[in-house]
Picture 1 (tube, rainbow, N blue to C red):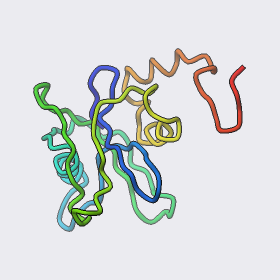
Picture 2 (cartoon, rainbow, N blue to C red; picture 1 turned 90 degrees about the vertical axis):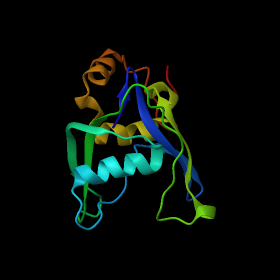
Picture 3 (cartoon, helix red, strand yellow; picture 1 turned 135 degrees about the vertical axis):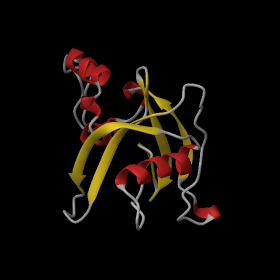
Length: 146
C-alpha cells in the first residue's frame, strides 16, 4: 500500500468481465520473502521502486491455504507511477489497464472493502477519515440512502 496525502496507489484491472481497482501485488516467488515480492510487484505493475515501511496485515485467502501480506510502502516523491505489466500474462492478454492515485470516494465501494481488509484503517489519515463518516457516505446494492 503506497499512500500520498489522501490518495492510495491503485492498479486498475479488466479481468473476468469486470473492471476493478486493487493494490499492486501478486505471488511470492521461490526463494523470495513477502517483502521482496511486494517491492518487485510494485515495480512490475507500477514502474516505481519502493521501500517497505512496516507490515499492515497478514491474512489468509478465502481458501485458508495461502496468505496475503500487505505492507506500507514508500516511493520517492519525484516518482510517478505508470502502467506496468503482469509478466505471467501474455502481452495480448494483459489485465492491467491503468495505475494511479485514487481517493476513497473515487473508487467503488466493493473495491474499498478489499482495502479495509488489507489494513487501510492502520494508516492514521484513513482511520481518522472513516471516523468522520456519518453513515450516509456508505451505500450497498439495493439500499438507497435517506
